[in-house]
Amino acid sequence: MRRKIMIKAGIIGATGYAGSELVRLLLGHSQVEIKWLGSRSYVGQKYAGIYQNFFQLIDEKCLDDNMEELARQVDVIFTATPQGLCASLINEGILSQAKVVDLSADFRIKDVKKYEQWYGMEHKSPQFVEEAVYGLCEINREEIKKARLIANPGCYPTCSTLSIYPLLKEGLIDPNTIIIDAKSGTSGAGRGAKVDNLYCEVNENIKAYGVASHRHTPEIEDQLGYACGKEVLINFTPHLVPMNRGILVTAYASLTKDVTYEEVRAAYDKYYEKEQFVRVMDKDICPQTKWVEGSNYVDVNFKIDPRTKRVIMMGALDNVVKGAAGQAVQNMNLMFGLNEAEGLYQIPMCP
Ligand SMILES: NC(=O)C1=CN([C@@H]2O[C@H](COP(=O)(O)OP(=O)(O)OC[C@H]3O[C@@H](n4cnc5c(N)ncnc54)[C@H](OP(=O)(O)O)[C@@H]3O)[C@@H](O)[C@H]2O)C=CC1
Ligand SMILES: CC(=O)N[C@@H](CCC(=O)OP(=O)(O)O)C(=O)O
Image 1 (cartoon, rainbow, N blue to C red):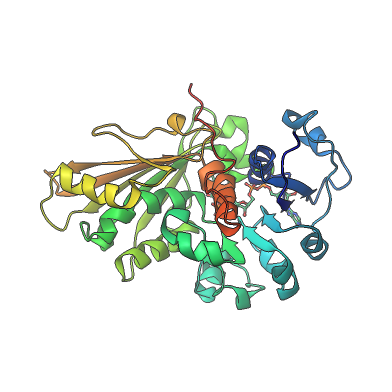
Image 2 (image 1 turned 60 degrees about the horizontal axis):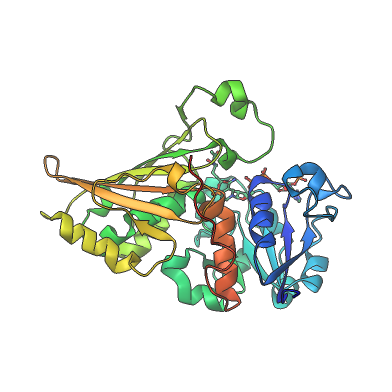
């Protein structure tokens, strides 16, 4: 029996790492038909010629980034493109015809000046910033259901926020003592050729980057600030590690009082017990990137250190799934009133 197609989808930036992961997930989605594979460099070329994993699965050729034409043809547009591109293309006409899920950071930060400072560019569509909903499904589910424009969260911010949120929300940690140490696989840097990401630079190596200056700092601070109702300043240090996929967050904060394991666990359970994609691990199990690879799960856990009166919060996700394309599909499902997990049933790959 032919499957029922409900939603026509288009992807601008389908040839990047986040875009190709969207293609993989949407191909397996029972309610979606991909109508537009957008590119800048491969227009007119067969999509499966770029990614041979789609050989015999996709016959279509790449199209351009004409978002206005795309909006006339589809119900939902995903922009998996560099910072600034979505903001430069979007307009009211597009938003009145199609829903937009932007995987870049263009609409994640509500303070436009702050965005311009951290991203070093002028915001081309500040009029849509207020309307855009930050697509962290576990926290903003009801707003997402009504949205036209989704700011799909960053990969580090998704992992960091979900790891820390319950303790901050419950007032168990001091917001201004938070330190986040994070590590990412190289696909996080995208497919574009860069010397820093060459095999010999990355393999058998680990390095910090963006120290005290990474653009995800204000995004994480904003989200943690909303959780505790006041301004939050953090230290955030990302590291590049020699693996393809995965983000691991280890975050530290001072406890506001003496707490037991059970009390902290109850805080995590309060927010995540019913969540399909957040797994609070059993006591003493530290999340690993391998255990979430290829899936939309984010695994979290914690450990209390009574000596220092701090708690260590840990999280792991796949940067191109829950950190990008998977979360984008989860957002689309919510926006179209579908089962939130549709197309996202992938079991993590291990080893
Ligand atoms: N990689 C990741 O883990 C994550 C990425 N993201 C976000 O997703 C977005 C894409 O990232 P990623 O996939 O890694 O990047 P890539 O560099 O791998 O891909 C970029 C994509 O954008 C297209 N593109 C570039 N410039 C233009 C342009 N001027 N007009 C139209 N298309 C253009 C490229 O087309 P072509 O190939 O034809 O040049 C390519 O399809 C970014 O905003 C990133 O921040 C978010 C979370 C995680
Ligand atoms: C390893 C690496 O370079 N990672 C990227 C973050 C991933 C990404 O694409 O950013 P968004 O999540 O904001 O979309 C970086 O540090 O800029």
